[in-house]
Every structure is written in C-alpha cells, then in structure tokens.
Length: 158
Image (cartoon, rainbow, N blue to C red; front, side, top):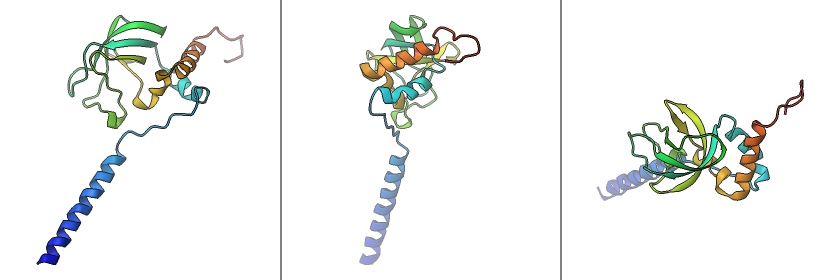
C-alpha cells in the first residue's frame, strides 16, 4: 500500500506540473525590437486605424464585466480625441491575454482606435513599447503623421 500512495502522489504532482506549464503557455508573451528605428514597421501597423495618440489620466479602473476605464485626455499628441472617453473592453480583460490595464490615477500615452458605441480601443501590452520610451514614441508619431501627410503627386503613392 505504501508504494501505491507514493505513486499516486507522484502522479498528482506530475499533473499539477503539466497544468502549471500549460497555464504559463497561455500568458502574454511579447518581444519588442531592439531600437526605435527597428520598430518603424510595428508603429506603422499600430497607427493604421488609429484616430489619435493621447496622454491620459485614468479616472476609473477596469472591473471584470463592467465598463472599460474612463480616461481624461490631458494632451493630444496626434489626431483628435474628446476630452474624456471610455475604453472598450471585452468581458474579461487581463494582462495574461495581452490587455493593457490602467489603474485609477495612472498617466499613460495611448494609441486610440474607434471601437464603436463612442468607445475607443487602445494598444495591447505587446505594442505598448511604441509609446513607452521617447525614442519609440517619436517614431510612432512620425508614422502617424506620415499616414496623414500631404498627398503625393498624381499616380504616386507614399
């Protein structure tokens, strides 16, 4: 009987280890490029559908099943945005699924895209490096401005 108890305990520990490894595999995993210039293609993609890049303060924080965070726009770096706006959220946002979560009072630069019903989507945790450092932010702003730049001569595309 002692051998059987040890075997069951080992089996239980093994299953627990497998579950822990599998859960870790579901966590958000991001790799940012080395330099701001290396990020240009990521920045271009991040601003493709964006309407603004703003500096905000979170007035509320996310609560599962509730509304997304209400933020106050302190400064518009590019584009247009209302003075206050609500972020769009799914039923359960989490950093494990690469959602960027804001705490009440937190100040943050956000890339905003329309999400319907007067709400806005923001960048994911994996794209947050694009606005987190001055060098990366400069490249992201350049790409946003380039997207809306002067029209090219007829027949050419920028």
